[in-house]
Image 1 (tube, rainbow, N blue to C red):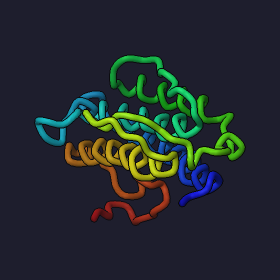
Image 2: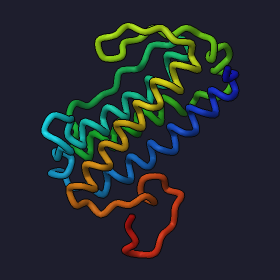
Image 3: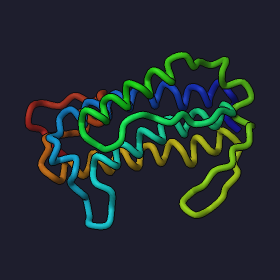
Image 4: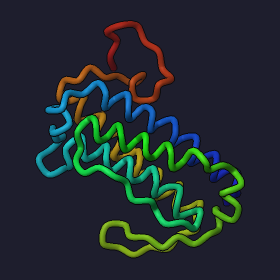
Length: 168
């Protein structure tokens, strides 16, 4: 079982990093790109990013035993998405390892689609909330990439470096 320090390390730093990557990706998209869909029956890219942002909060606050804060801004425009990221960063900024005391074993009751689930904090964060954060972030990224936005792996993770024009 993951301990509280490990849960902190697996959530806050990861979310903070990839929230920055979400912003960099969104900043590269035109407004019309954010309305694109990867398939007819999936959310448009902007809503994928918005949902990832929601999971950034849902991955942290329930394991701390706190309500998930409600964010301002309706819609999925670039300006709204970037403002929401700033709001999320402000909500996460005061949190640190001490806030995670008891978090890994804390029961978290939540909905997964239509299902009601209870998981301990570590299981909830690592098997539900973080995977959903990444699912929606990757789907938004893939939608933009499929729509012609010039994005690569380095844009997604901010760690890779490739020569200009290189693509997988």
